[in-house]
Amino acid sequence: MNDLEKETLKLIGEDTTSPDVFTDDATGLALIRGSINDGIKQMCMVTGSYKKKYFLSLRSDCQFYRMNWEQDYFGYVVQAFDRIRHTKLDQTDVTRLNDEDPWWMKRTGYPEKYMHIGYQYLGIYMKPSSSDNVLELDCVVIPKAYTSDTSPVKLREAFERATVQMAVSEYYSSRGDATRATEWLNKSLETAGLKRLHPDAAEQQYQWGGYRPYSAATARRYGDV
Image (cartoon, rainbow, N blue to C red; front, side, top):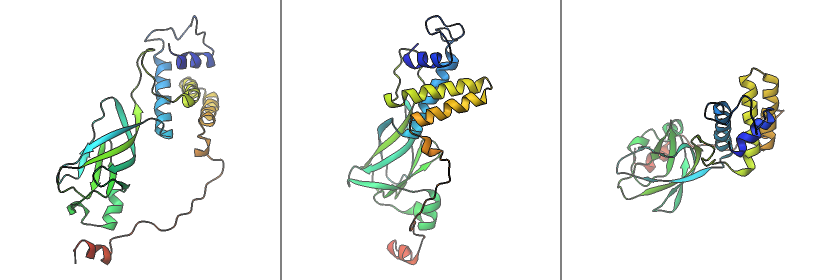
């Protein structure tokens, strides 16, 4: 067993030298290992601590792309960069594009924005008119589950303690002990510095401006009038 598994067993009262229930084999450690993998995925997703670059080759007149992640799982794009023009793309979505430019699926030119379409899919606005461009995507990645004590654990050291506490919480939850499960979950959030995501009082956020709907100026820009 690895260090994360040993620490989890200690916190739930199991003997790591000569365990009674969670013996050091695939069957005995399946529950603990699964809980630790769940904690690793949640920590990487929420904190964005595990990132990779993905290079997306654009094709002429193609607006939607499916990304192929072989080793890990795609989380979300942090930044999209046009390698030819050396500019960043803004993030958008279908609803916003429909309001800003109802003809957005017909526009061609240099890509200006990107959008997430479900799982593994990415949309580009505008469609490229040639196939000579590449987008450099900085992505938050969710690591695949490790399967043995010799497998690499793709988790920052700063979040290891919080991940162990989350695994302990999941263990007590599986036993129906909601009180202890909640207690260890709160410890995990505090250790990882995520307690602010669950504030005691409602937060207030103020925003000025917003996106611009499709207007006469936009129509003139694209020659729609």
